[in-house]
Amino acid sequence: MRILVVEDERRLAAGIRAGLEAEGFAVDVARTGTDGLWLATETPYDAIVLDLMLPGLNGYQVCARLRSRGVWTPILVLTAKDGEWDEVEALDTGADDYLTKPFSHHVLVARLRALLRRDLRERPVVLTAGDLRADPGARRAWRGDQEVELTAREFSVLEFLLRRRGEVLSKTEILRHVWDEAFDGDPNIVEVYVGHLRTKLDRPFGRAAIETIRGAGYRLAADGGAPGGRSGSGSSRGSVGARP
Image (cartoon, rainbow, N blue to C red):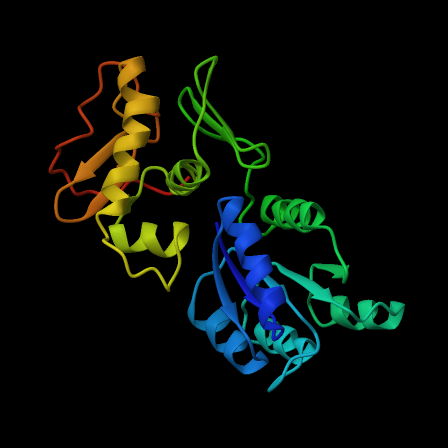
């Protein structure tokens, strides 16, 4: 899932980013409130980690302006301000959670996952497509009753495909949500990870869940690639399934 971190302390921002990326998140960083507001308005993030004491616009202003513009991305305030009225003001201006510094990285990740589960898009605790299942909180995946071990990046690609199952997703969309805006490598890295998922989750089980839509991208079958379905490696069909 894609996270925006708005934090002006460079070393802290880098540490948060590295920690979240190790958990499989894609992370963008803004170091001013003004930049954070612009990114959060222009880009569809899954959650925002927001400091309060920022140059440009402070965190309260960023939060209030996002809500006034109809941006309802879950916001976790992460700040050194530990007064109860600071927390009240943050929550009253539209924040969803509040965590004070110093903080535990494990608690930060757990709170982010809790926000992602209960936001307005109704994210289920366990994602499913037929007999293909993934638990984002535990970072575990199964095909039927058999658990399949995935790397953090493989799991992130699978999670994004499952959340948008039935839809055609371009390489660019997958890169933006699973990697980040700063990624300047070969876009074909998406093909590599799709290949890994097919090798681990499809071929050993006689499935073809991830379909290649030539010239468009990839689609995860809503039924998880039920036995007897079409091969997912070379179809040219381009219709987009309905979002669940």
